[in-house]
Image 1 (cartoon, rainbow, N blue to C red):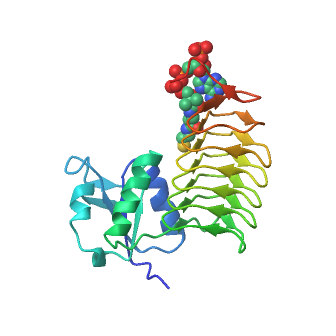
Image 2: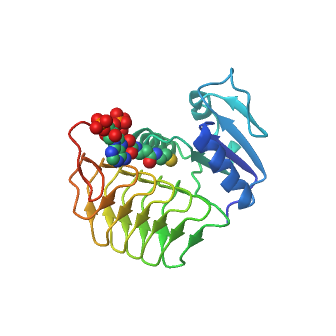
Image 3: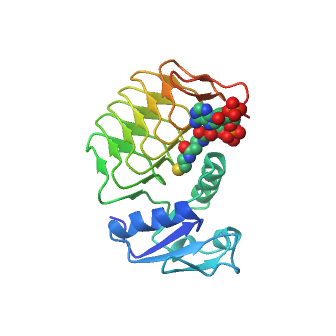
Length: 213
Ligand SMILES: CC(C)(COP(=O)(O)OP(=O)(O)OC[C@H]1O[C@@H](n2cnc3c(N)ncnc32)[C@H](O)[C@@H]1OP(=O)(O)O)[C@@H](O)C(=O)NCCC(=O)NCCS
């Protein structure tokens, strides 16, 4: 079992602060942040920012018991995680003490699950996911690598979501829907039909938007 002594968090922005809070709730003792704003940024919450992300990569993988990447951009986060994994850094998963994770669900390494999130039986969540505050991932959902489910978003049973897709704040996805890779589901959308790779959809029912980049 992993010792919960020294945790390195890469990224000291708002998301990094929520990751730190979740880590504390599960018993991590000491946290160090690495952020490219260093040396202008020396502290985050009550924890030190001790270097840039490049500085971190040059440290020994043995310096920390766990490493988590707290960068919101899905593609950047996933790339960084692959690099850290290749360099044998001890990637860890951060699950808030008040998240509800079924014993029959699987959440892969380097994911974060925030307070109030629910992951139901049979769900499989790929590496480096963000399951944000009070979202739900229902039974038998399949999420790829680097997916972000935003606060208050809900996935019905059997939904599949491709790598690097982002489901926005408060969106809902009807059961059995397939969402492709690199998809953006806008805040508040209600998704009732499959979404192809790379699409941005908004509204209720969710449709591809012409005037959105
Ligand atoms: C969908 C989204 C990515 C579009 O962003 P954008 O490309 O910057 O779009 P804009 O804000 O320039 O808006 C473009 C148009 O789309 C509309 N629009 C934007 N987001 C929308 C949404 N979620 N639902 C419905 N319409 C939306 C705007 O009203 C605007 O319409 P108009 O041209 O008729 O005035 C973004 O608004 C969104 O919903 N992001 C999710 C954010 C989120 O969940 N964050 C969670 C952080 S943890």
